[in-house]
Each structure stands twice: as structure tokens, then as C-alpha cells.
Length: 242
Image (cartoon, rainbow, N blue to C red; front, top):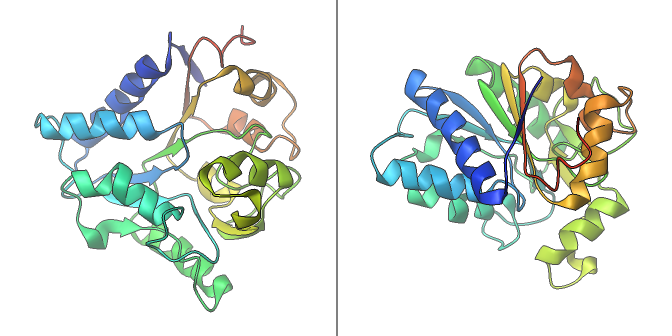
């Protein structure tokens, strides 16, 4: 596990984008696992800048998103499909058919989850998975106390997660209570993992994830067992780290 400490969010975003850009330069047909939420926004902005400068192209890139809310249409302002389009996809040369996001409106959720796993396998697995970390230690929507063996699945969101995500909605009542998420086993099958953390509210849980016991109560702790993990933290998020 490699830990990179940077000064602030801007530097974190630049460092993360340079790692992802390096992956695309070395392997233009890379399979990227992408995350949503506030943490990766700066990284996506930097990737757009690198694309506009001609440094990278996404024309042959395949993407798989970590998760999607259940019950929201793809064009809903709070759907992760809409998030990815407005924050990244609409500004680069990625092909629509190469974008994969779980369908939270699927009639058969179980089949949707199984098909998502098959698609990832079809493309040879994820080359590098981008992650954030929740205040309760979740990665993707893998909430505390869920099984580490899970693949893509339907998850009931924790109250802490619902509360944290309510800042994006008109009220906490509008936040969906379920989502489709890549499971821990799916994430751990990625060849490389890049985790980003910023802000003092992530400091304690990040310490527990890196140095604490590997337990389902802290889902991100499983990353200790992955052979190729890079964690980028700003000064506040890394304040408890050695």
C-alpha cells in the first residue's frame, strides 16, 4: 500500500489525474472503475483539462461505475448517471457504448447485478478502480457489516450514508434508501486501486482503514489485502496517519 500525502484538495486532484492519465497513455484501451461523490470531482476536472490539452484520449476507454441509486431516472439531477455525464463524460471523447453504469430502474435487480459482473469480466476486469471513502468507512455503497465476499448487489443504505448524501437533495426524505453497488469482491478484483480522501472528517476512519483490524465494520480495511493500492490524502485527511 502506497500513501501519498499532499497539501490540499487541488494537489490531490492533480496527482490523482496524473496517475489515471498515465494509465491511459500506457494502455489506451484501459478499463476504468469510476466513483461519484464530491471527492473525485476535482480529478475529473483535471482529466478534462488534460484531454483538452491533447495529453489523453478516452476514445477507446471502457468505464464501469461503482454504483447507482435505485428508483431514480438516468436523467434525474441526483442520479449518478447524470453526475458522470455532467462532471466528465460530456466533456471528453468517450463513446457512449463504452460507458457502463448500473440501471437502478431495472425490473429484475438481481439479473442487472449478474449482468454487470459479466460485462466487467467480458472486458478483462478493471485495470484501475477509483475510490472515495465514506465517513463510516464504506467504499462504493458497501456499508459496514456487509460480507466481504459480495459481488455487485442491491444494498440498503445506512442512515449515516443517507444523511451524508442528503446535502445533494432537497431534503433527507428524497434520498433513495437503496442502491446497486459493486461488491467488495468486485472492487478487490481490480488490478490497481486508487483511493482519494480529503477533509478532516475522513481522518479517523482513514486511520482505522489503513492501520486497524480488517473487519466488515470498516469496509475499506479490506484494501490492506490488495497488492496494488495507492492512497492520496490531503493534510487534513492524513492528519492521523504515520
